[in-house]
Image (cartoon, rainbow over all chains, first blue to last red; front, side, top):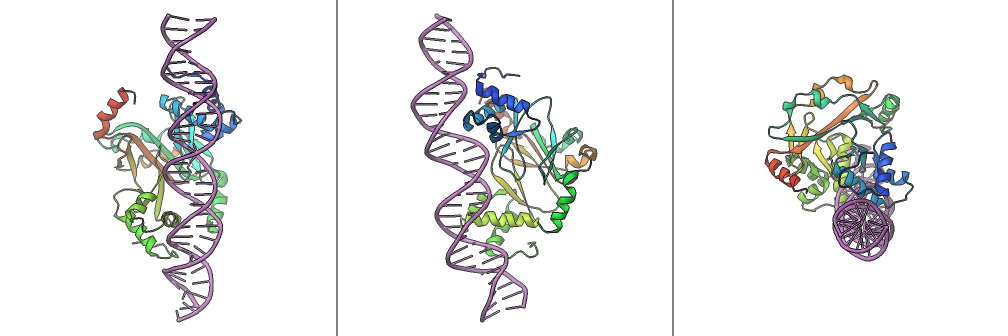
Amino acid sequence: MIWPEGMKRTKQREDVYRALEASEGPLSAVEIYERLERHYAISTVYRALAAFEKAGIVSKSTLMNTDTALYALNEGGHQHYAICLRCHRKIPIDGCPFEDASGQSVPEGFLVTGHKIEVYGYCEKCREKAMDQHMRGE
Amino acid sequence: MIWPEGMKRTKQREDVYRALEASEGPLSAVEIYERLERHYAISTVYRALAAFEKAGIVSKSTLMNTDTALYALNEGGHQHYAICLRCHRKIPIDGCPFEDASGQSVPEGFLVTGHKIEVYGYCEKCREKAMDQHMRGE
DNA sequence: TTGCAACTGCAACTCATTCGCAATTACTGA
DNA sequence: TCAGTAATTGCGAATGAGTTGCAGTTGCAA
């Protein structure tokens, strides 16, 4: 467990950290709260996540068409996802399309500190069902 | 003004549409509500936007670290932005890094229907000020 | 012109997230 | 080891974007 310098170690923060560590994918604050069996106040979970984010060991992201933020440990570089519009499964994309692209697309003088790429569509399993629904005008 | 087939033309919807048309960048529902001088109920604005989005003539997006959705007319292809973390200016990026990149990065069997790319950082004007603040630990 | 499904306004509601404040706790230095 | 203190926590109340139920209104097809 990496611990940001100057950050107090408390039971609640360690547990939030472990919840993220134990999870295969990004979690929402409420999901973490539930996984910790509501042992701590939800505001504490939010504050721990905010502290981790500020310290740079956690990244926060919001998926299109949702209003809940997801949090994940920043381990070894970054990752992008293909997100299924039907089952909401997040499939990691190998490599980063942004790195492949010519850097000249960013405006001159702009200092890039990060980026976010999300690809939307239907995963193999949902493809057919989604098309059926679409045909029926749902 | 393009009008989706089967959608009723009402004064409120036309005004919402014009507000988007007249704007240089994406607007939030509240911004539209204000620009229309609160003439209509905010729920009406939301419902008009939802109807436009469903009809495919408006796209909805949410920026990282905010909880307000932005709406824009879908005119001629898509656009990505470099977003300044300090002044929140949205600078259009020429071209689409995703199109340049090899398509093989997306998982096999995944049917892509759309994507979203946001580049974060500091624009030329905010660069220095942002660095100063960072140094002072803000 | 009429009928009615779609649309609107209003107010009350939801839900994620934040905040104020008093009580608690992790760390520092003696 | 222990006291002092600044950071952290828990609680509940507040916020703010967005949604919803419902009664009244309106676009539009016949």
